[in-house]
Length: 133
Image (cartoon, rainbow, N blue to C red; front, top):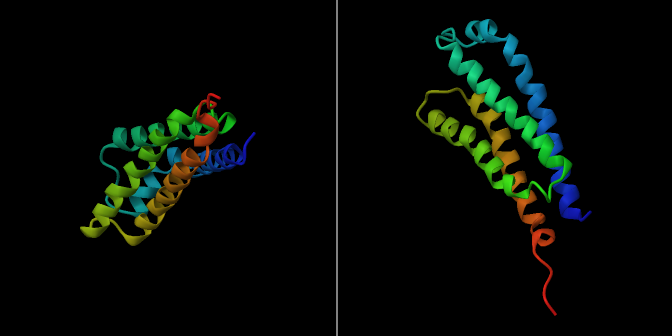
């Protein structure tokens, strides 16, 4: 296993575990979120849909971690998954529609997306076919 594959394995494993820890409790926090950050959630299907899709991606990250070379084509998609939360949150923050704390949480996704991109680039050499002699 190359150093790039070891790096990608650690990055995706860490991201998957972190995501499970952060997302799973949200299934039980709908009422608390409404109290802590009013108004209450008015479209629970959007909330639970978001949590469910995000949770599914955490399992995808764990799959990528098991064999980074085999699942390397999913890495750019994983970068998009992370930017799909960070960029809209940044836009909303700049428009005064979300608090700085929310942007702080979203910045974790920017960091992970950057690490996913680094993983993709670091595993490139092993993905290249052997040169003909």
